[in-house]
Image 1: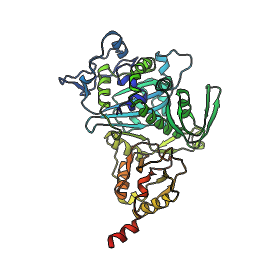
Image 2: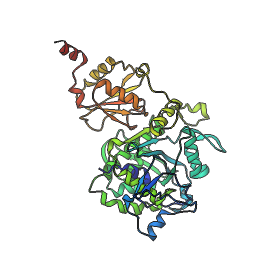
Image 3: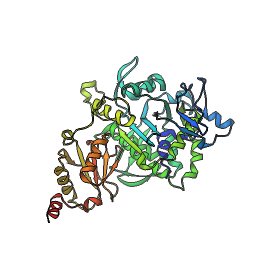
Image 4: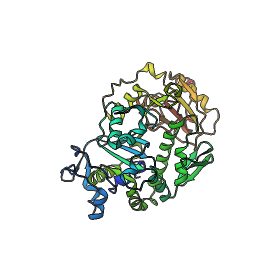
Length: 443
């Protein structure tokens, strides 16, 4: 299964297969980014403007498997709001606010792809401006400023390359693959004539076309606002990744590449792109992690009416340390703090009493901060899922070890009020209550 489509889905489809439009001068080559089969580094050697799209038009693409990633690489992906009265593919078209911000880490050491979603309303310091929302950094100073702000916010984590993509790309890509299957958790209705935005979706499991998928991700009229949008973005990424991995859809990717040319701006070189897609083609589902930047909603009254996502510094330190192996001054979670981990329980079975057993089992293991999620599950699960909502892999592994079963899923699609969401599956029905196990052992 081609799990490299996660990279494709996050608007780097063109970049990953060598068909992007670079409108700015590349950064200096990354030492040890990639090597050829002959161990010869092939990253761009000059600071002159390079267009991978132009390379494609004037020469044949080098063999895909000729290039490999030699060390971990961090790439910032930004989805750009539509800029009025601009032509697709022009530099002006990429100078809007960022609607989506995701930092990716490709790590050949453990063969993993890690993704950190950063809410657009995250409060940050912007050079020359002061306090503001992170989504305005690109509009204020372009890609370089956005890269600087994200790096500064995440404890100076190094960012090697960036990709900017306009929102048209996602909509057209969804249409190209024939739509994606998504569970819409509630009726969604909203209209903003000034933005030309009309959202009208009904609750339920359904196949969304490109326009409907955009409606799904742009809806903000619920209690979670921008954070709900980030979660829906991740849901769409998973759905599109699954669709793109189907053998019947793979032949459409070359057409998608050509379509994406006008919507993508990056400072990745052609050889770097080929190395990334080569890496991604060898990934399995369990090699991919998606995490939301931990934090909480700020009170608009305290910030002149502005709605901010206030990043948790400890949570930030944790995800930076765990996902990017960067010094975040984070200390491992201890047994005492495990009892305070906020855990949401969600029933995916038809047994209405299973959550009572689940709560009792977790209380027996000293997990005390439990609550029942009211969110509906789109499907019945055979295997219980332990959703790492805020990137705390240590807590998820502790829960899995205590239960003795369950699958850890590193994404942020669980209950938004939780640190860990447990989706109770059919396998929990097969577990004996702790008291019964003890009686059997005595006998």
